[in-house]
Figure 1 (tube, each protein chain N blue to C red):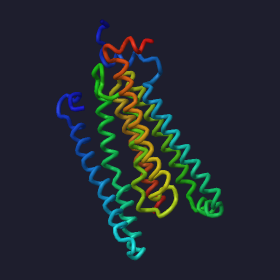
Figure 2: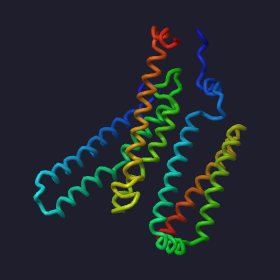
Figure 3: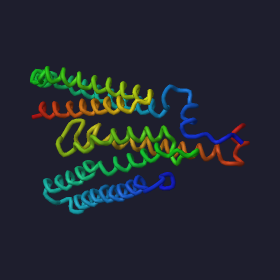
Figure 4: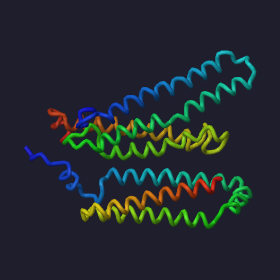
Length: 158
Length: 115
C-alpha cells in the first residue's frame, strides 16, 4: 500500500493505526465475557451487565474498522499502477462494507429489534459484509496469482 | 510485449458504461436497502396498530421537502458530472456545492423531525 502512495503514505499509516485500535476494541469485550463466565453463581443482574458491557463495547466502536476499510479502499482507488495492490471492484465493494457496518454504532440505543446488539443491521450485516469482502479479496488475489504467474500459463490454457 | 497504457487509457478501454466496481457497489447497496424494506414490512405486520399510530404522528410536509431535497441533490450531482465532462470547473464547483447544501438541508430537517 505504502509503495502506491507518492508522497506521505497517510492512507497506509491510517489503516495500520485503525487496525491496531480495532484489535484492542475487539479483544477487550472478550475479557468482559470471560469475567461474566468466571463466577456464574453471581447475581444474574451482574452477569447481564457484564454481557451488555461486552456487546456494547464489541459493536459500538465500529468507526475505527470502517475507517480502516475506507483507507484501504481509497488507497486502492488512487493506485494507478499497471498492477494495483488491490482490484478496483474490491475497493468499491469495500466502500459498501463501510456503509454496511456503520449501523452497529446504534447498539446502545435499542434493547431489541433490528438495531439491537443481536439485530440484523447492527450484528449480522456488519459481520457478514466484511466476511464476504475478505473472502472475495483473497479468492481474487489467489486467482490472479495463479493465472498471471509465469510458468503457470500452460496449466491455465488447458 | 504490449505497450504500457496509462491509467486513463486502461479505464477507457473497459466495455461497460461505468467501472464494473461501481455497478457492484450499486447492486450491493440495493440489496442492503431491500433488506431494510423487508424488515420494515415484517416488523409492521407484527404490530400494525402501532405502526399506523406512529405514521399518523409524522409530519407530511417535512417528508415532502426531504424527498424534494434528495431529488434535487441527485440532480445537482448529475449536472456537476456533466459540467466535469465538459471541463467546466466553475459549473462543476457550483453544482457540487448545491448538492452538498441539499444534503445538509436534509440533515437539518431530520434533526427537526426527531426533536
